[in-house]
Length: 89
Image 1 (cartoon, helix red, strand yellow):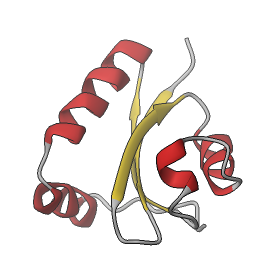
Image 2 (spheres, rainbow, N blue to C red; image 1 turned 135 degrees about the horizontal axis):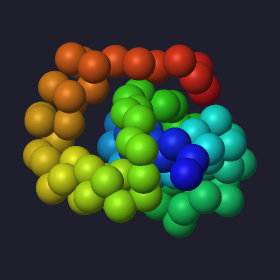
Image 3 (cartoon, rainbow, N blue to C red; image 1 turned 90 degrees about the vertical axis):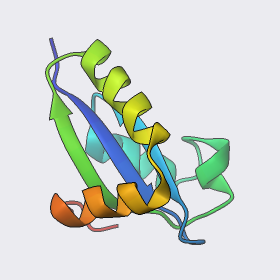
């Protein structure tokens, strides 16, 4: 099974977008091209500000849901405490 990733993007309007993928670099590039989601397409450019690895799709999807339930302040704290911004966008 491929590694899965949960990620948070910071959009040009300073909003945060959370998603999951099996290919993080490709997914960020797809977001930047305007083809990944309607939400980010209207808020380009985006910047990868956080990600975490998961061993399977189900755990990644569960974690994505958990993060989406967090308040913005909690997401920003998560980003600050665990900043792994390896893909500058």
